[in-house]
Image (cartoon, rainbow over all chains, first blue to last red; front, side, top):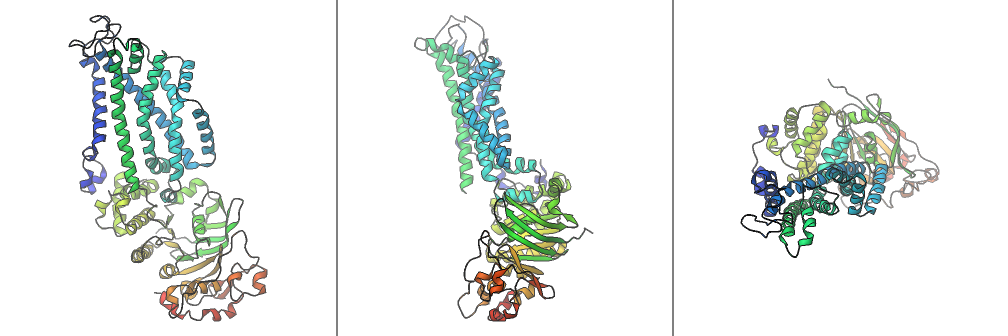
Length: 287
Length: 334
């Protein structure tokens, strides 16, 4: 345990935080955790091979053998939804993590130093946000070539700007607070002030945005998949499954419904987490 | 024994970029272990003088002149050296304990960071030191309270924690910018007493900035009175407050509620001059009852009226007229 506990007896307020969290937050966390576990265990729990063709013929409706039915190539949809979850969670996580770190670091320093670093960042933000998000991502992927890695590069190049803008705005407000001046008066280095004093006070709105960005990234991945620029077959992801099944939406709706539901449920849980976090922050700010 | 140094401020001027000087030619000295007070109303430049010593001026403000501490010229020091000095040799406490503490840091951690940064203490040792510091500044049950966040403390307790942070790396000079202004009167007295005790125990020098003459009176050996960016009077606290040698100081003393028993509170007529439109002569002349043509013609220099007691006034022979009714102000020095 940390050094504090050797001095301080446990305080009642330091119960396991999960027990004190609100219901929506707990539901969201448990939900995402469950999806992650299902995705991780896909090879174990999936009833079929995700690439096995012609199982019981194509476009079979849900049945005891194929709970979610089969797609146009006769692949088991439940199996593919489970495998696709691995890629979708990866898209959401990487698509948030890299831009988040980039944007937060850049936004922090721009906001802390203000003056010319901030002016430069402001121009860059203007330029990047002048293009619609998807158009820019598409253009970059089209330039670099299809595939997940290039998709991540494109997402990182485009969406760090959103994080930088959020954090910069917060940092500009916080840099004038007394405790930042007090930190400077104590002879702390800029790095220490920025990362240990500024960061914890400005990070939360960026994290909350990250939750909705998670969903946006999955949708962006789906859009790219639709154009054949995202995940490359035989791997798949929910958006691609929907795109591939769009021609059968009337005759065999299960092909698109189940991956659609997967997206909705995942977004729901992620949004619950995001909303709860921003609620907590608002309450703390109000008190 | 730790080195004992004097702070010497010579001809310090602080000006905003493209604007006017808001601190003009301020000079004073604080001997090792001495407590020096700077008094003046808001806008007189006392806080900027204080911040200029640590080179923590607001954006766009620049200091010129000479500030030396222990033989080192602070205004010329490199950024890294200056940073090393802050907190370890010269520390500062601020007016508002509500904002001076980082809301997301546990207070024990906040204090521990100071010694970790300056003395390279390990996390565990730094935390032990932090709890010791909290005890020293009078926080009961310090070991348990170290894990609390600033919002769990009252204003007075937060100011104690702020003081503990400032003193954690054992500075030899403490700058206190209105340390008790945001606190209620009872807590104010406790914090001032604490500051005084700590200063004596540590043999620290203290620069105390306050708009409140009474705060300075109780704590400081010597006091300087600032008006419109200038020092107008400097001397031993006792004589400056009991027998002021400048009309502005007399006005300041007269405006204390304690000074006046049987009549209305006497405010100084008029307002301080705009730093952009200073009168050519004495800055106080437009508000001074004793002002004559010579006062308005050219700036007035400092002159030593009594040994060790300096005043920026050429009408000191007539000050007795203004000092009437000031006798009651004796109650201030206690």
